[in-house]
Length: 559
Image 1 (tube, rainbow, N blue to C red):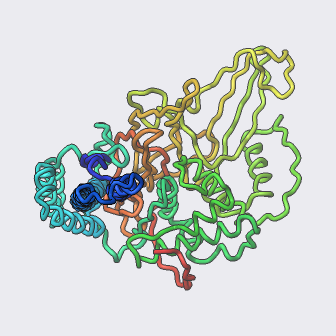
Image 2 (spheres, rainbow, N blue to C red):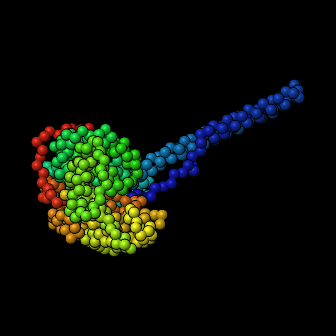
Image 3 (cartoon, helix red, strand yellow):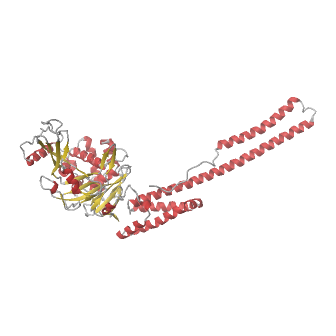
């Protein structure tokens, strides 16, 4: 965010102290040289002998030289004093510049927090710091003269912000935001798309008696991680598993065991209700050891992070420690029900964890040759439903599902394992949802490759939230009714974007926005959104939480 303009540093009036010393030294050397040369001349010529006038002349010249030397030395001292005073003024100006820079940083911080709509103690503390810097700078006439207009603007803004934070009623918030200047807008944390109006947030501070409302500090472009964690932290069945210490019954393998334990400790800390926010350093360190890609401070994709985290938790919690050799399945002569059941059974032989139970479903994949009509049917497991966005203007989630299930033609490249009609035969492939998991994670494919560059699709998608019936798009067992409980949002661009989460709290069924360390109550995300990226639906509603009777292990997560 741009701050106030600062004056460019300059050293135009500063003369190095070495220069001053050299000038003074040269002046003294000139005086001594003049005196010595005259004395030597008269001594060698012998003209001093019996010539008092010559001696008088020499004495006069020597006095004049010394006087000249003294005047030059005084001038050098005066020059040195002027230089010292100038240097002190420069230091003073630099200190004023530093104060102004601090003021700009404080101003930018307030803008960032307000833009996140964080009516919390963090915002109030920053306002106090801003008040301090304004008071410091107003004491200087020079700064007041140069910054008068900017300070006036900030004082007005400060007054509005204090009124804004005094009593955060819903109507007051809307009026206050309309009056604030455009400088509060930011592409990092606010969706400026007009279609995203349904995602407006309430500005009500969180209550400490509600669990799972703890924020996560940003460790340097780690918003992608924080958004994902908050969505999983509001997945009640997964939370119950970790808070009840059920994960300890599994003999976690060495590679992923630490990741499992750090995630468990983090969930317990987030549900303790003791802190407004915590610093997930130990968890991020464990992630970085398993996958160096997530070890640094580079912005990453939250869907890629979710995939890695879920796979790591599954491998760590998998009850199958020695994988079995599974014979390749042939489905010829089998009904879809029988083939799907065999495929799921074989999958469970090597994969048995809470992640499989809650998050995995099945696809039916059909490949058919257009020349001979031979087809192959296969059943595959999935944990995420990647849906394309069919256009760049507006669509619904149903449009995305229809586009996903449509036939894909492959021209001149046969996809059959053993083509009977030649490798250049045309084929088509169709991927259909056979079985939906208890918790369905949908990823909207907002990023696509165009040439050599990745671009973002900002088209608004109409997101259903309650009593969602996916049966129209499922060809296997009839699914239950689903409800949205968490959304991972991405706003901004690929190079300058920001991730947040909007989740329904299992304790009070209210929606909250999680913006790194800031948590605040939000409206239910009904309607169009150009920021919605990863959607979390559950069929096990209503989510309700009964406090676990087991004691929860304390951990050293930094607060």
